Image (tube, rainbow, N blue to C red; front, side, top):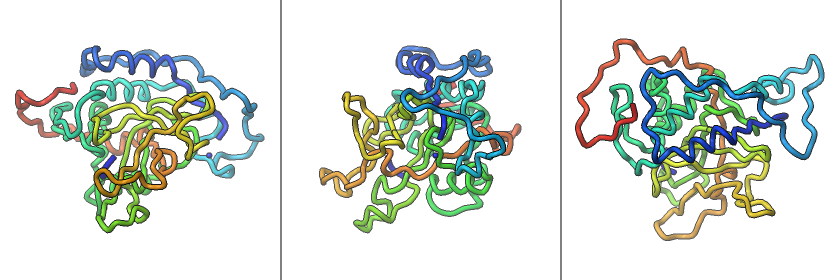
Length: 283
């Protein structure tokens, strides 16, 4: 929680259930092992009918990043690899140190995102020296300059999430002037638009929480189902929650990082480090 719009649904209940059920007991993914076979076509959202845009109307003309057809595509192998990589980190405490493919990461906000993708030989920090600011701002600028930043209501698994105003980053007492303060990664989306994402919770560590951009200011729906997790923290320890504290209410943008994976590929001559015995392994 620190430094760190829509025609389809990306429901992945079976995949996500597997992640949730096995995050504490399953052994880490074996480096070099093949990903599970992609699942079948994704379901359509319940309630309102979902139709494809008229022939000849582009996603861009409709204000969408992805076309209806692209958003309905079956889960890709890369997207499944994101789930598998995230599973190796879920449950680790805040700021844990891990080794992924020979590189050390501290699991703060941006470190968690970086570690997930580094497991796939993607270095999200590759362009960071081109920008200023914290890691989240540098990641956001990387995604923006490479043309993959978007705000569709239904993202794809593997999309990076950027949030604003999750904490008073500049320590001036104003909670509304702290853009790009936190990041996470989409794992799945329910039929009602509820997004399951993985991130580093500064109190609980790496975990899966929820966001719904169709109802960004609702913590729960009428049945009691959780829609949005608390994300923004109090300015002072023990102080009142800020007016806008739910994940959907401080959302900034998504980034389709998998689309630019080749541009961010880890260098083949990467330097590996000696692994101290006290570090967790996410190999």
